[in-house]
Length: 101
Image (cartoon, rainbow, N blue to C red):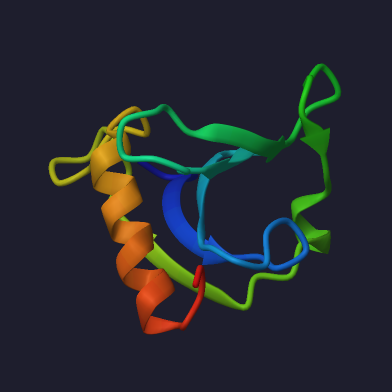
């Protein structure tokens, strides 16, 4: 599992009203926004020149808050396709940090 991480992060430069899901696998990473418990996440930004999304240097993205989660393939991990789970986890963090109205 080395080099593979999941986290919920608050990165106001990308979205100032909600936590986002950050998936890192080695040098590759992706920010996801879960707008609904019944829809797949919107991919906001990612690494890689072949990307059709916003490409950023992750080192340049300020993360004001970061909460680590088990990676999806670990025994307690949850897949990025489980929108209900991630939406609910983000809602809890948004409420704790007075985000999202």
